[in-house]
Image (tube, rainbow, N blue to C red; front, side, top):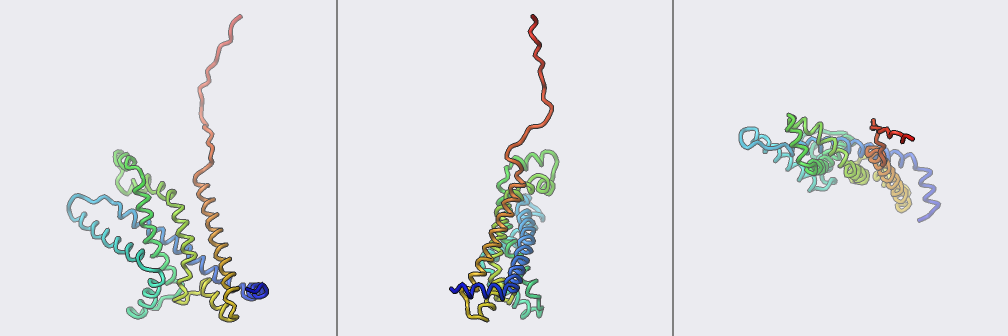
Length: 249
């Protein structure tokens, strides 16, 4: 690896590196946020108690079966295959030509949603059953219990796992180059192909990926500490003061 070429590539092609990094971050942010919402909805639906009998039980079991199929399929197949099937399949079968960037966001969002749904389901299952019983005892239905009691705790508990998914998405967007999305990896291949200096180009890219993931990790940890509040709490309130009578001489 040549230091001279390293500096030359960084100097001459920094706009392409910057553009690729921006596309990578944009896809990762949108995919993580939308995927989190999908996972939250799927996780809540899968934890709805099934009635003992009736049409509602059949309906919920059907929905749960479809959601389980969605989760298993997207967790069990690589994102690179999903990208090829979705982007080229919609054009071939339905004659729908989707914008590459939009297709990338959809693929990452749906893929992330499958993983987040299991994370959310696990977070809900970790909540003590007594909280569900207490909420139902005061007249809350399932939706009110989830909204007011369970989900605020779940969101806090799964925040580290959500941040981990965000970091994974930043790195996994590199597979989207198979549908010609101009993210960081795609831009790096173009730069390296122009100069035939693959080592230098991808070394710069590895540094950019590290800076992005390291920064995101530190921001999320700071946010977690913010949610946790201060380590030491001062109890404020009225305290009873007892007057000790002076000893009479």
